[in-house]
Image 1 (spheres, rainbow, N blue to C red):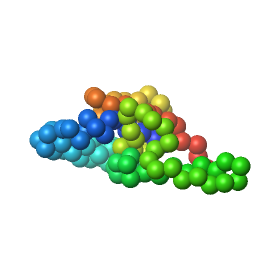
Image 2 (cartoon, helix red, strand yellow):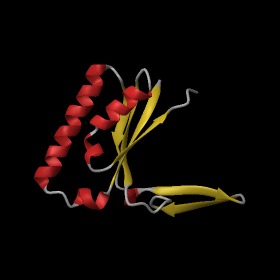
Image 3 (cartoon, helix red, strand yellow):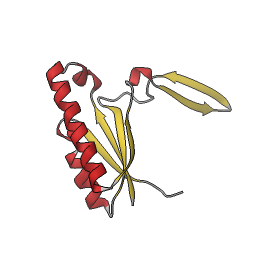
Image 4 (cartoon, rainbow, N blue to C red):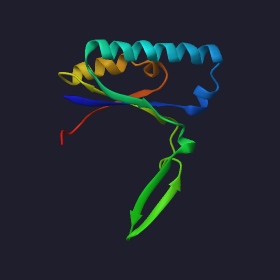
Length: 115
């Protein structure tokens, strides 16, 4: 079954990281991604640009509105995602716990409806 691992963290906290800490985090993500690939579960994933580069679209009463940035005000922002294909929720939760951001942010695990 496919699962989306959505990676949430505070952009402000990440921006405040030292260059050394940022480098260590990127190395950790490289190792994590490599482990997903070696296990044969990685279906896709990307790091996202900052929420300040985002736009939200909604249509109300036939009128399209475009808002700058994310729609919801939250302490953590969506920074990236992985799509994995694993046997069950327990396996997806195990991979989420191994994600580097899980130590200071949140990894949302959501099953994907097959289309």
